[in-house]
Length: 108
Image (cartoon, rainbow, N blue to C red; front, side, top):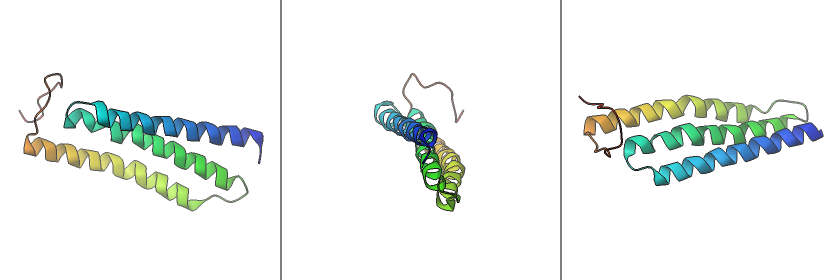
């Protein structure tokens, strides 16, 4: 395998791991449901996407493109925003409490 490809795969894996870690920390540290919803949908999606793209590049460097990683990445980037939207709509319908620092009145 080419040295440039190995460096690129390593960068994608490290960057994806960093985003996934930041998403997990955000999920733990943010105060209410509405702000907590952003961490897994934004950072963790980028994290898993980076790891999947690194895996795609590593396994396709030998010749053919690996269809598994392409489908996983596509499914992830389609379903994460839809599920976050549905969770936010359900939380608004249930009128979940917000911390005073959260801006906006979603149900007024």
